[in-house]
Length: 193
Image (cartoon, rainbow, N blue to C red; front, side, top):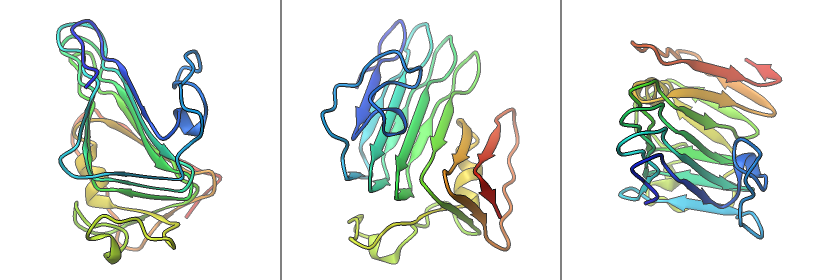
């Protein structure tokens, strides 16, 4: 919990912004000697970087050079500023089954999901990408990132969402992402199919 009255703090788990050694702005160094190969954040875990009285929400980065499995809650809300920033990613694989609440009175914050490849499939909100992850153990062979259209739509109620891949983002047949409100969905990759 790095929430504070006059602006949210910063939480870095496994690495810095996009696996680097700095925060999102590229200004502050992150004190992590070596990036994690695997990161698991289980259901019930709360990472809070909120601004409780004034200022903007803080920054939360969950990163691994391998696979990241995230089922917790990120909170970087702002009582009288813009919502914070969160990145949840595994360079090779990602299971995103949690929630990022990045609301603010001056606008929504941004959630970045950015593995090498990402597949968006048609399905309910809480579907994991691998039946073997029901116990939330990262398997040695996991090297894919999959998220459902319903999960993306639900996340758009509390944050702007960027799906970014250095490889390809694939949209499976039947995918429909529908939401209401002012939030933005951005999709960035060299190849989008």
